[in-house]
Image (cartoon, rainbow, N blue to C red; front, side, top):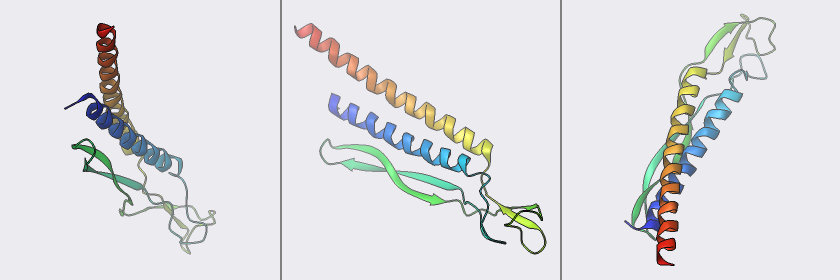
Length: 135
């Protein structure tokens, strides 16, 4: 594997984890977003999945986002008859976002991003030192 391949793989990993962090941030930001009309569905948690793709230029396998989908789990029902989104019984459908799950996802994405960044920086340092030796 050459240096360009290593840098390309690390960059793809950082891009994928950056997108994962954006999805987590959107979920957390909308954890209290309910429907606008009585009985309407609230914000539905987004999920992200990845896939390996072959980069034809470098011949190496890299990660990329396969799909941003939705978590189809049930909504929590909360009794709040004063809420404009409450149904006839006074219950409001709440988003299926669990803050703790999102925090754990964000920590995992951050660690993966940092690992890719470390690999990228180490490779760059190796290139710089090699160039210095050739001077």
